[in-house]
Image 1 (cartoon, rainbow, N blue to C red):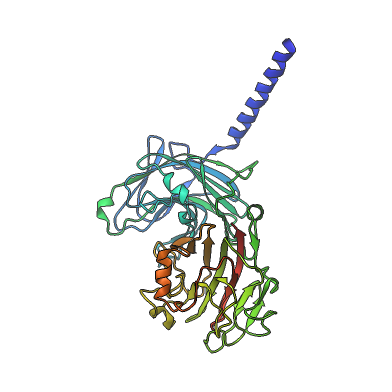
Image 2 (image 1 turned 180 degrees about the vertical axis):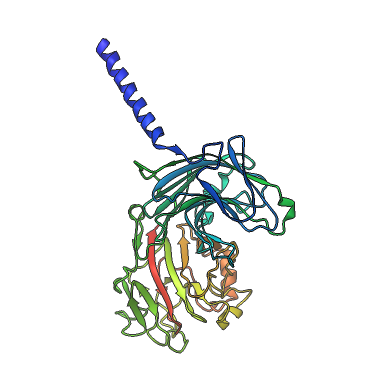
Length: 456
């Protein structure tokens, strides 16, 4: 009996030591009394201490304001509680960020990844934004279930994990966003008071930060559910978590393996280039499939989650088509549902069709993409496209992480749209059970990379 008591006592002591060790690894980043270790670098919003919390106050005629750590950090797990007054503005936590003293016309500029605090109806709390640089990396259109986590006018608990090239976020204990990046292995941590522009009724609203702790040693990556989409910005690469979730590359960054010319038995001998990990259709006369022609996957797909990066040159036109059957043997580009890839500003096709349904990310000639919510990128920048076809034939288009349209293949509404489109004479257009993925040659230079797919 004594030995059993001794055994359980030793076990309890061991568990207590583990718990004590884990807690000891966390240390306060804010002492609750002073701003030692922090400095204000941009903006006019004041930061003060009230009841053990850092309190920032929204101020008119001020850009975004930042209180940042004097020290830079590499790998860490950061935890803190944040409460924001009001539902019209937002805040954020900068991670591995930087300061350009000459930026913003000499007023100073903070840039780097930011974890969003968003009480607005958009509800992107816990998403990842690249402040003053690449804009949204992980909007919560990619994880809509997490939109309900934020508690208005209450303290919300944030956990941010930066280990290696991965950033993960949790809000109130629930996984939210997962980004694998190629930039910023070190940088400061910052607390933001967002500028209010001309919304003078927001002047004086406050944002509260407390219980700020950091762990920099003995870090173990937190587990994310497989269903949560990963934004991987490493070109032509798949993380172990993506592979475990069933994703694979359709373009390996080196060869044309898996691709052939549309209506051909081999990859085009001209008109396409693979260089520096990029697959590019080369410029010709701007005509449709008059140079190298379209290329298609050898494999056909039924239901899938397809992601790809693309880069447009000025005035360029291309497209990513799906459910391409190659049975029509038509002249020009092969027939299929098309995610439009286009310079809306300078290519004339953007002005044709109906109500913009030939613009970037639209379902070509059928449904117009709603490119609000910060989804646009300038010509010459890499964009992230995504097409999801569910087993029930619901289809979604995304642009830079933002869902821009949804429709249902074969529905009455879909068929009505086809009946007034350029596809009206193609029998059962867009309703094939399976088909190839196609990259279009439209005679303009357009580049693709990081083409990955998961069967659903």
